[in-house]
Image (tube, rainbow, N blue to C red):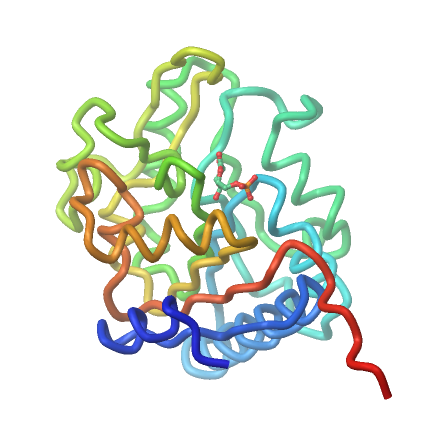
Length: 245
Ligand SMILES: O=C1O[C@H](COP(=O)(O)O)[C@@H](O)[C@H](O)[C@H]1O
């Protein structure tokens, strides 16, 4: 199916994987990620994967959890995190642990939240992530405001943090309005990953990404990542009705 998002992706050298349902999207994403990780394991003997949190990726995580990969040789981390302990319902680490317990137990886990303070945690994460660069696979999501990871529109030092030469690998993001303090990997990690995926669910997010193709990263930070390497995986939020037989 050719969608406006498909045409925009193609015009920018990206590939859109257009799934009919969230279940199909989860399967396509898991197959794509597993193949990239297997390639890295074959070439280098180890692999690294950074995933995002939020509501969208749980089905994809469950698919990864059922895979046969040599997870002991994989380092797993997050693109961003709320600054809360793992047992907090808002924790992305908690979501990963609940949704893929097998992977979580077997992979080498690099948490973002360390429980010191957001700035000290960001410095500790930067040190740990440096030896993993470039990451083999990065999975990003997108928010309705065009944020990705925890790089929010018009945030402090946003343009600097989107760049591949951002001064730190991980940054503390202060609390705002209803938002908890957070930690985010910066462009110094996110822009340099070997394989990058963007998960997009539902018509609203599809419109957000379509808009971002013509937006400034300052207004819509996800715009800074709409360049190769990037594969976009789209699914509507609902299951597609079956065609009458
Ligand atoms: O706040 C966040 O939002 C985005 C999208 O989340 P979703 O709930 O709409 O799927 C996510 O990619 C990011 O990691 C998360 O911190």
